[in-house]
Length: 243
Ligand code: MG
Picture 1 (cartoon, helix red, strand yellow):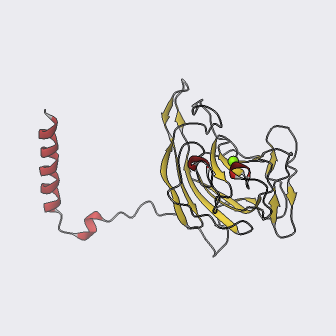
Picture 2: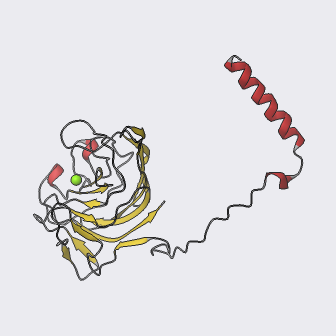
Picture 3: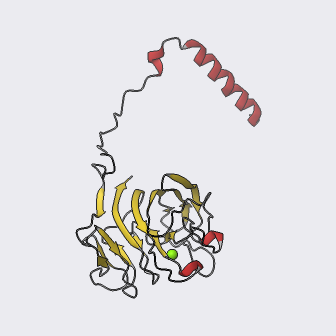
């Protein structure tokens, strides 16, 4: 059957069926019932995993060495990149997630462009949401704060000045691969910076490479990485919900 006839048939069928429904109850759906999640104001949702609450780095380890994470823990409940100590990664692996993370760019000017408050948050250890000072500070647009590094320019610049706490709320869908290692669906990411939408369901093309094109090598769940780019960026109040 030609496609337009099929479409017309479905349209007429839909009209006919909906014409028969006169009872509002007929279109009510009662199951499943969403489970309850408590979400206190400025608090961690009841079903979230706390990745950092200021106490310790027990949820983290060194990215490259089989060793504990050694970034600095501060008395104000935050942690700070220890330049040279290297990236840190969560001990737990994750796939689809909602991630909340707060960060602060240091006040002291440490450089320009990519050297000014550079860090980063890597979903599944591969896909970077850039952390950088982009408040009245210029660099290439697809590498500024809130960019999916070298892939997606943020919709707007929602950066606050250095020394101010900021937050990212990230909704992330992991890519899927088949048994042959071929990607069957892309990763998607939505990011709010300080409550402002900066990435809207962006289709991630593959790994966020510094040099060269994105790669798509099959992988499963993997840790969240925080990047040591040599700048003393601080983080606090990190929690994650598996989706
Ligand atoms: Mg970075």
